[in-house]
Amino acid sequence: MFDKNTYIQRRNALKKTVKDGILLFLGNNEAPMNYPSNTYHYRQDSHFIYFFGIQLDHLAAVIDLDEDKEIIFGDNYTIDDIIWMGNQPTIEALAGQCGVTHTQSLANLINYLQKAQSSGRKIHYLPPYRDDNKIFLHHTLGIAFDALKQKASIEFIKGVVSLREVKDDEELQEMEKACNLGVDMHMAAMRYCKVGKLERELSGMIEGIALSGGNGVSFPVILSQNGETLHNHNHEQKLENGRMLLVDAGAELKTGYSSDYTRSFPVSGRFTQKQKEIYEIVLKANLEAIAMAKPGLNYFDVHLHATTIIAKGLTQLGLMKGNAEEAAKVGAHALFMPHGLGHMLGLDVHDMEDLGENYVGYTEYIQRSSIFGHGSLRCGKTLKKGFVLTVEPGIYFIPQLISIWEKENKFVEYINYDKVKSYIGFGGIRIEDDIVITDTACRVIGRPLPKKVTEIESLMNLS
Image (cartoon, rainbow, N blue to C red; front, side, top):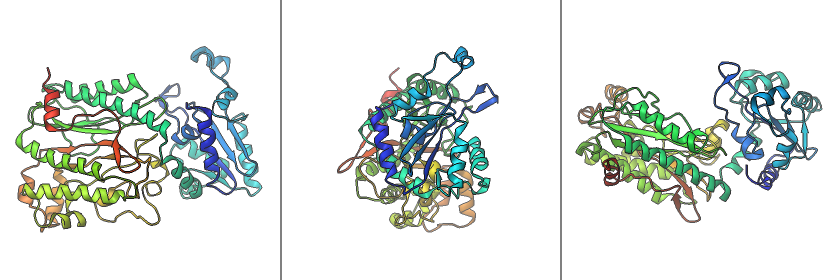
């Protein structure tokens, strides 16, 4: 936890964004894997962490705007709990650590909310993503399950986004640690990548590094020689000479702050000419996007610039043709890069995505594109100092997508399908770094992680 004044200041700032009513925060509970006492690794709700800092199950909190009162609802551990878990702090002590003076039993929460609701007071809640919290809201507030997301408070959502999207110095210090841990993970993957190993050997190793240095991985590890599958969680292949390995992985600290990196490198430790040509295009897009990002610029413009570099590079190789800038603008590049340039990062690896991507990454003035590829950009809005984002251009050769587009004669004026088909089996390349927007530009967070061809080859061939 941070100092209690941090949480007090955050809650006071939030109070200014919503007019009246009750702001309801539902913490996350333990979730069973296969029977009640054998649970998944626990993770508190990120909004609860941000405003209260307490990472414990079976908690809820309210900010009562009308009565100017904050209450944490929870129950102290019994001796039966303590026998198994050891001595635990009281709810009163935990509340004191984040500057909350009022506590009540969790059983009182239903009555508190229903009494307020019957008095005509508004209860603001955020879109629920856990089933037990959906059930609670349904039974307590009488909202139909299929209406829960629709009836979430837009005022509350926008207020939370306005605070969490800008990272302060305390948060950036945590993210620096998370990024350094992520660097350790990727350096280890490069060092121990050898022909004949199984992908899961590397996946398990880097997940162990994340656990030994923090709260584990910030999302399930993506590590595959089939890098053309964007979120490939299968790790059962044997590492083969001549193939590229794509590793997309990050770490989460005990405080909840995350990192997110991707590196792509040859299993053999040496790039072939063909691999190097594609890799250098992606690297150029990554480097120029980072050099371009600054306050006042729309992130969509950075995305468009990166996709134009992709189109220009592929045109030089003969995989695309025609005017590269126009090809990127209309979305012809998306055969090779169907995703956006990046997303916000913080307590969530896709920060605040539970609130709705359009609330986080767009505004009423900057709307999501309807063009395939461009429409996948998770954050396109105007950059501000303190925004933390990923920069992750890529090039992929997806057989099914190539086949569909060719049959549809899609963008034949921009795509050389005969040559593209000769790359099927190549896989995919993505290069991802985490940046923070500064006063005039941006900087990459964390220690340098090799991404130049010579740097990667040197690291992989040390032993």
